[in-house]
Image (cartoon, rainbow, N blue to C red):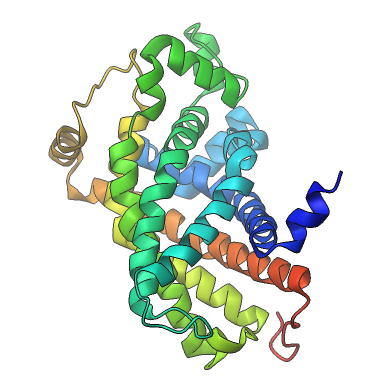
Length: 309
């Protein structure tokens, strides 16, 4: 009975809860755009994001845009809490010359971000695999060809383990780590750098405005996606293939070579516009929700009113 009061009284408990709020805000705000991105990456004939949106809504209904959201939603609280806490530890561990009363150096921020991305991919890879399988599932085609039509993430996970074994649930783990390690370095560095540029001194005082949080968080998301987008395309294709898929890739390099050979180098950037738009919205929401929740829990300051959106 005393667990939650004691948990919330600790700094780690507050970080955990604030990270959860940030993650939930990010999933809800950007999931439809994520579904459109995944479909663009997987199929060369899918068309623009707008044409996919119209087709999905017309043939599968608006709910199809949120198919698979339960998988990231179920894990997002723990995942985001751990990401922010691991980052807080590593950003200082890699540059011990900085005083505990000062914000981490930009060097510590970048290296800490790389380490955070590598560690969080251990949990993220299976979640992404299940999410991608659900997002690419076409119920109308499944019924037509009498294929399995999964109702949710648990159904997909059970099917993967049954057909591909326990190792199947970690399909795409290597490419996920190769994507997430550098992207998180860019992610946290861009956020810390931009918030300081937009509101000088805020890294030490923690008194930036809501507008600063939204813009810095949005730009951080864009930077992290642009730097790793080709790897994300390869990851989607590797994780989308099943034992019954007509096209089989024998690893990362084989997927890269065959994708470029068949569809040109532009395939590596297909869906980037959708990803960038989603990244700005989602990460602005994540950092804003995280910072606001943290301030409410610590009661150590208010958001400046003059620049509220």
